Structure formats: structure tokens, C-alpha cells
Image (tube, rainbow, N blue to C red):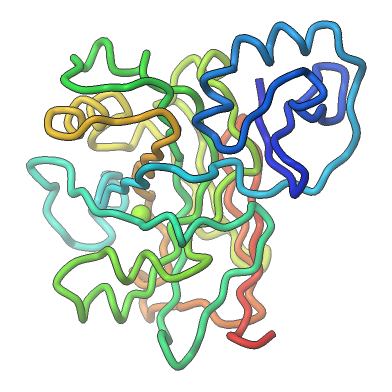
Length: 276
Ligand code: MG
């Protein structure tokens, strides 16, 4: 299934086309965790529903408990930054205020940052209460996958002692365009991942380049913290980010960033100034 969100509530993609509002299927869901809890009911009711309509998609992740993210998790990105491969996953938080729509504007305030940058990422949406799970069991905790852009203020990333602020400005986490449920993604480590800035190809890699795959990340985090339905893990970005170029190429208002993960759709976001 593909689960989307609109101003009028959650929607599900009909196999014959268009989007069907889940409330017309008899499902009441105010946030993503409630959609996940009623996934079987949505799938069953969808079988008898007529095709749906076009909608304006909003961020499909609503009120997550946490948005976890990983730094330096693609071997090609580690090489371009000149860093050493970390001995364990480098965890940071992106706070939920940063979540943005799949086609929403990203606010780059020049008074705040002059080094905005993009990071195309595979986003994992957790589907079950998960604590202390083995690597071989970990993918059973995944509800679905989506495309994200881990927008980053590189000046604050280097100025601060940690990454949370530089990655959590409002609008800095476009995500979508919908959640594709895990049953439609046979192997999350075999997906092409790409980004473009103003139509120019910048990132072109594969999730097989991940140092720690989705299952290993879930096992690592769930050792000490319970993962809950609706939680998000951003799994890192491949090579081709702006700050690693020579000279660095940062984003400016007017730039349009497009991110794609194979089979999961495309998100596209325009950079805007603070008052546009
Ligand atoms: Mg990232």
C-alpha cells in the first residue's frame, strides 16, 4: 500500500488509480501511528472501494515520537568527506518541527545560515514497538519507507558540538511523497537513490552503499531505546552533497532540490527566503 496525507486527512492509493480518503473506508486516524494500527482494516476496505481522486500530498508522517538520523552511513559519502568509517552508527536527532511536505518550501534564512545543503535519504517508518531485536528480526519492525531530504545548515553543523540544531530548523525535513509499505520493498539495500539541484544531477548511488543497513540500524537503536510505531529513521546520504564539492556549493533561495529513491517516488522542494 501507499499511504499519503492531505489537508483533509490520510489517504491510500487505489490500485486502479487515485487516492481514497481512509475515513471513507471507515478508518479514523489522526496521526501516522493510528494509520499503522489500522493498516489491515484499510487494506481490507480498499478491496471494495472505487478508484480515487488526485490530491495535494502533505507529509505522511504526523506526530512521530522521534525522528532519528544517521551521519556518515554511505561508504561513498565517507570517502568524499575524508572521514574514517565510524565504528558504530553515528546517531543524531532531527526534531519533528523540521518535518515538511513532499513539495513544500524549505526556508533558508540568510540571517541564520549561509550554508544550506541537501541530503537525499531513505526514510524508514517503524511499525511496531521494538526493543532488543536481532538483526535478522529487525526488518519485521518496519512499517514502510519513504524519501526524505535531510536538509542541513553546514555552518551550524561545524559551529555546534552536535548536529541536532543544524538539522532541525523548521522545514528542514521534507518527507514523502507517501509511505510505501514494507511488503512492496523486497530489499531496502538494493534501491537506487538520487538527487538533483535545479535539474543538475548531484547524487547518484544505491542503498547497498550503506555501512550499516536498515536492519543493523534498528538493532543498534533498539538496544537502549524503544522504537514506536510512527517513529522515523533517516538512514544517511550518499556522496554528492554540496559541502563536499570543491569549491563547496551551497543552496540559495530559488534553488529546487529533487530527491528520489527507486520505487518510493520523488520529493521536490524549493528553497525560499524567510519572507517569500
Ligand atoms: Mg543525513
